[in-house]
Each structure stands twice: as C-alpha cells, then as structure tokens.
Image 1 (cartoon, one colour):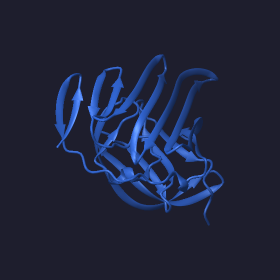
Image 2: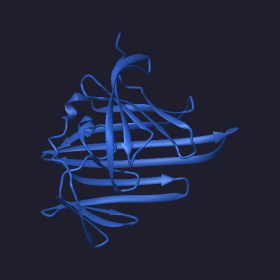
Image 3: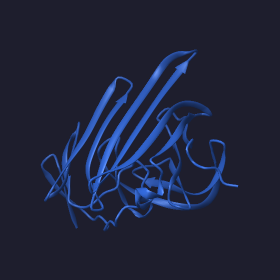
Image 4: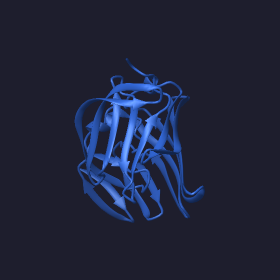
Length: 221
C-alpha cells in the first residue's frame, strides 16, 4: 500500500512498481505534431529531449487557436518541463492557459517522495509515477498516471488494440494503438515498433475530435 497525502489528509492506495523509463535515445532531439481539430490544423505540439548531468529533461509545448470567420474564439497554451533522475520523475513544472483560465502545477522531490502542488491543493506520493505527456511508452503497463492538466493522480486502464497504419506528414507508419479507460476516457495513443509516440486522439470538451498528426516521423513503406 502506498501513501498519498492530499490537503493534509493521508490516503492509502495500491500503486504498481515502476521500472526504468524507456530511454529518450529512441527519439531524435524532438518530436513534433500538427494539432488537428475536426480535420483542420489549429495548432502544434513539440516535445524536446535533452540531458543535464545524470538527469533526463523533457520539455513539451502545445498551442491551439480556434477561429470563426478569421476571428479568434478560443486559445489554449500548454508548457511542461519534466526532469527524470535514476528512473523516477523528480521534478515537474506545468503552466496551462485555457482561454482566460490559468493553471500551474509544480513538484518537489525529497526523501519522502514527490510533493505535487496544484491550484486545488498539495499532496505527496512516495512511488514513481508517469505523466500524461505521452512520450514514455512504459505508461501502457501502468494503472495510475499523473494528469498534467489537473495535477491529479488518475486511475486508468490502457488497452492494447493492435497495430494500425496511421497517417503522418508525408506518408504513414505502422503503430500500436492503446485506448484509455477509467478516470481518463476518450483518449487513444499510438506507439511505433521502437516505442516512439506517433499519434494522439481525444475528444475535446465541446465534443470535437482532436488529433496529433506527427510531422517529424519518418514515413514507412
């Protein structure tokens, strides 16, 4: 049993053991996506990978702008910086601007585990956790994830739906589809044979379908 403390209240939940995350060496220095809403490109997402001393640094940035008759009606901006040390997420900094609303999530690693601060409270988790930034294929074997939009720990079930040929910029690739259920629903993620993130699809709050179409993936015959 593991301890999570939320707003001063200690909670006990069972979390599985976590293994060393997949090496970032399977990626080049970055992976990029066109953000497509109902068939129209409305933004971009870029994740970059680097090393600092013994730490792995992953920076993710996403922006989306929706217009009507050229008039902006909705904007969304997201930035996340993850630091991994010795196979554990050791630091997370997130800033989200959703229209006029702003959310910030931060964390601090110490001997007691990871302390996560959100706009709704602070809690601690003493086990390694994988975020919903999707670059780490190891997440498909997990039952809990750290939601980087809310800062909450979400219980999930991630189902392998088999291999598919998916579109990327300039062609297509073969990738395995995984569907989320549980506290995160209506989300599908694809990883190629090397474990590289290749696509994302989810339902937005307004019911529209949003897809991430890879624009840095190499097309396969």
